Length: 277
Image (cartoon, rainbow, N blue to C red):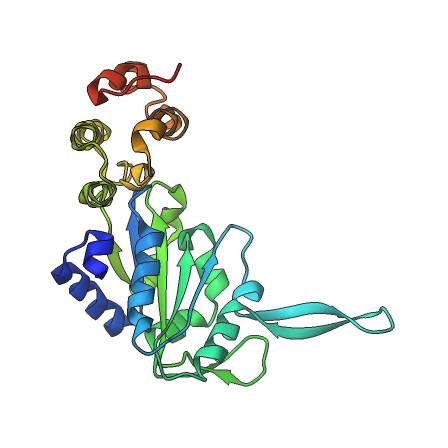
């Protein structure tokens, strides 16, 4: 069922799952639109479904901090209106507390993991990710901490985001990295169930293959999720002009001729789609 939903072969999924269980944490990385978050969520459901484990998701951003993720001082109001400060657990510590009450696998998904300053956000977690059987005291005190044995971390990373360069080798060693190149079979599988015009899908896949050949960079190639929409024939023009073209304008900003070849007015005829009047 998972292979059918994700258009990834059972053999490949088995390899990924074995790596995730061996390391305890993995990062799905690839260009925009390759379904990284979708796949992480589906895998999390698969890993936890048999034993009813816990699944949660958090999205990192440049302002995300150690205090948000691990623990830190937070102001708390009292009944008389004054403020007091207490060390409050962050998202990861709260997740681990809940997971420690269960025996089933529990998966935390960190979306856009490379958008935060990871070494600052993780703190002591850098040590614990490598030594899963150890415990360590946290900077804020409150005893010692270890990652529960049933906690799995799945991250997603967009390779078109330049902040990927900030992911140092120390962190890379602690995760299994799973590459997700564009998988256009997902478009075929999705639209076959909807009964979308096969000719339209065939022409679209040929166009996307040609476009990615022109981009010629696996970190910036276009993925399939832009086109996983119902009524694709009616929405394709809007998708192309408002999502694909702006992306290409940035990538081909100094190559106007190459960009013009993939404007909607140029590719419309190749797709046999009429423009809306």
